[in-house]
Image 1 (tube, rainbow, N blue to C red):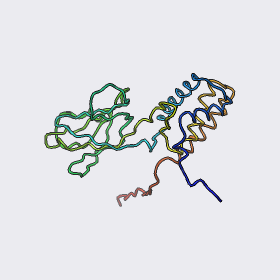
Image 2: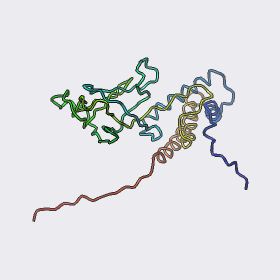
Image 3: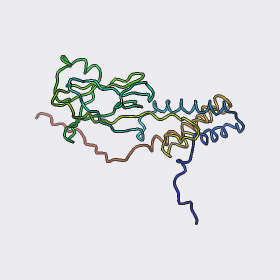
Image 4: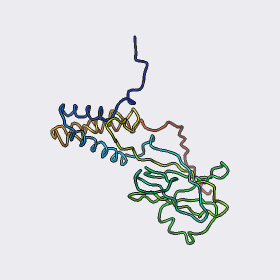
Length: 239
């Protein structure tokens, strides 16, 4: 039996192909330039909605920031066009998952705390080796505040962290989508659902069910398998 010998379908599945497939699913075979534009807008809205669907592991990335003496707060930006002139800035960041203090290539894990815990510190300017960090998520940026504040001894070492990056915009129609091949079916089904709301309302419920089913399977498969160990909690009552 002859086979293609290739596994590159998703790398040749461009934005215009996604739009064509989605329109065909809602029974629309002739469409204009404005229809393509509105479909691309819907695709971008759907990518933003996926950010509310939990963690997408293909969007998790790693980066390091050089620590500065006396500087507790470090900024990452949500957008790639925020107008900042910082050549070392990190863009497209949605959240920081975990972080460590790195000195001489040795990592010390940092504990992630919430706003109330950070607010309870009496002296936030105390310097030394950071042990905790507090993340604030704003409309246009993410800030990471360290405690303790790095001192002169810690300057030049690194804050190493894993963060969730935003799914890239669709962009021009000859681009490929910024999703792994496993998410192509739910991406097309989702766009068909969004387009049905505009062009074929009687198909909305059907398209929604198909989309949610495809997306559920893709999310369940996303990630990386690892061993799990469950240890029962043991009590030793006084006798």
